[in-house]
Length: 206
Image (cartoon, rainbow, N blue to C red; front, side, top):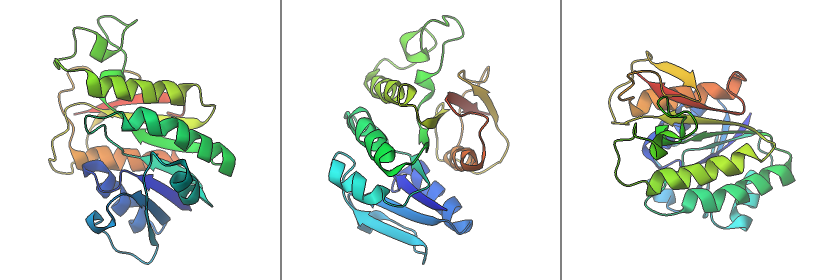
């Protein structure tokens, strides 16, 4: 299958690239800095471009079967600005499946279910700018009509691969405190062949 992967030079994205290539998928990366791509493979296509440029996204979307986005906020509004462009390009190309990596801050709060975690007392973060941008991206997906899933890790150290973690639809697993980058990437990739969490956020933690 043909996969468009966004955020491929980031911590989670680079691991997802390896999963996709290991299973012999055809992988296209849209990146601003091609020299930062660490993977090489005959099935790998690298496009130099920007997710904030509709023409670049449209060009990269040609012939894709699904999209994985591991874009992060970088203190900007890249997520919320790029999401409508990604959604439009997917619809134009007839691509329905998108899996993104979000944050536990946009899961529902257990103590105040009407709020998201970053809006409630559950959040330990004083700054909410990143969570707010993830929230806006989530709102775009929620109304897109696409088959979307948002993987929402809590504290995300690099860590090691364990293959042992807990997940929960729309909430962070109770007492979940952290999850490694490799385990987050594995679960994200597994959603390609899974329809259990279509139209949902998924909390992931140990």
